[in-house]
Image (cartoon, rainbow, N blue to C red; front, side, top):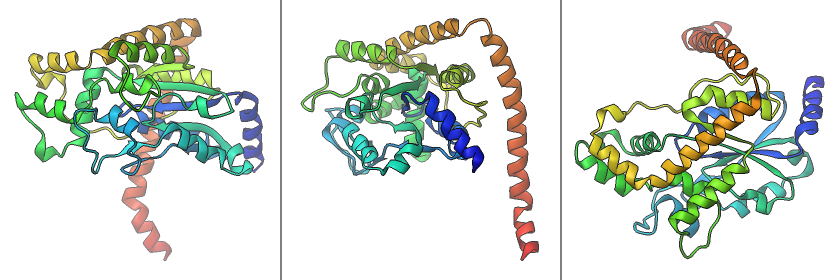
Amino acid sequence: MKFKVQFQKEENKIRKNYPFFIHIPKAGGNTMIMVFKRQYERYGGKIFFTHWGPKFNSARAIRIYIGDQRINSEGMGFPELLEDAATRFMKLDDQKKSCVCIFHGYHIEYGIHNYLSKPIAYFTLLRDPINRVLSHYYFTTNPNKWARGNKLYKDIASKIEPNLQAKILSGPHGLKRLPSSKEILRRAKNNLRSCTVVGLIESFDKTLILLKKAFNWKIPFYIRKNVHCHFGKEAISIDILNKIADDNWLDIQLYKYAKELFDRKIQQYGSLFKKDLHKFKVLNSKWQKLYYFKNFFINKFGEVLSLNLK
């Protein structure tokens, strides 16, 4: 109890802004949940999750996730509106609200600061756009229905909305129609500049080092979560990859810009970055071995031990 009270005191010193993680689909979000739980929940803090599901099918969410040309939301999940998430948080009693240490924006767009009185410190992770689209397709499509060869592109184009990263990060927009492509990109870049940390899935360990410093975290040990086997770029024709790239040109431009911001943040970190990164990789590798051993032991002997205890 004493340790939890001390944790809350330390948190209150640095929680001038609420950390808000923008979880882009198939961009490391479920792995980050594990990190958040180790950073906050084990010490008495709470994570505030925005909601997601079939009932949150506002026109705005539908337009972001499946576009204007195929408005068929039956069975699909969407994020709740920003204003609804903010209202749920504000309705919490003071005790519960004071325990919230971080927001996890589950596939929700940038912009909740417009509805909260407390300042927000945004951070997010982007992923190579082609890899993200392929991962999203193979994750949401039944393996028995995975398209092959020339049919793959048509199937992806019919199911996965292009430029999803840019659309989420561009923030709220009117209900009548999305802004122009150039305006979406401009807004998304502008919003990325306001983020405390812009991370990259392809440089996940480096991202965690930046987050550790930005939010005064303890060592952010992790195990990859929600990773699914599917066909990578090397198994797909160049022609199909080029078509996916053409469809997702906004995300490709945004990803390049995110890499610039990411490299700039590492430079600002200073000369200790390489040393801190190496130390983290070594420690996390050892921690992962212990984690797997613990789970193996529990799975192997847990049932036997419970029977003996009875």
